[in-house]
Image 1 (cartoon, rainbow, N blue to C red):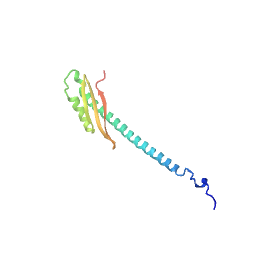
Image 2 (cartoon, helix red, strand yellow):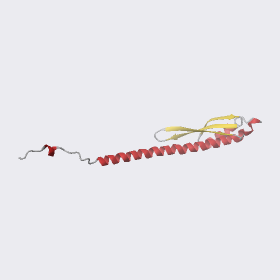
Image 3 (cartoon, rainbow, N blue to C red):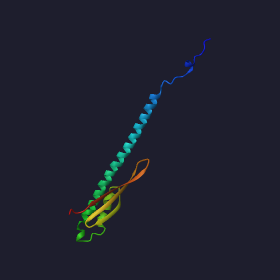
Image 4 (cartoon, one colour):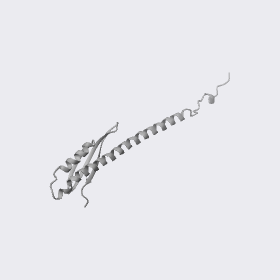
Length: 129
């Protein structure tokens, strides 16, 4: 019988399978980065749309508030701005008439799947001075 050598009994770590683990980790990171980018793009797209609706609502109110220096316009500018916002599926969070200007804040809820956020945009419109 020959003696068993200690070197033959030791199992050496050859690194087999480490490439698979690394590949899975990289694929996971790429997927997470893709989801984050898609969510950010969705938020940015919605924010641009909300700003456009806020601009339109302010213009609608500004058209009515233009003669505010010589006649009473009451709440008509804000009512007009509110109609524009609701027609576009958003809410008018705030509206005020300052001189001949109409200032509005438009809001909209965005469901991201993992969370829901409320986005808002401000706009002002009135005659050029």
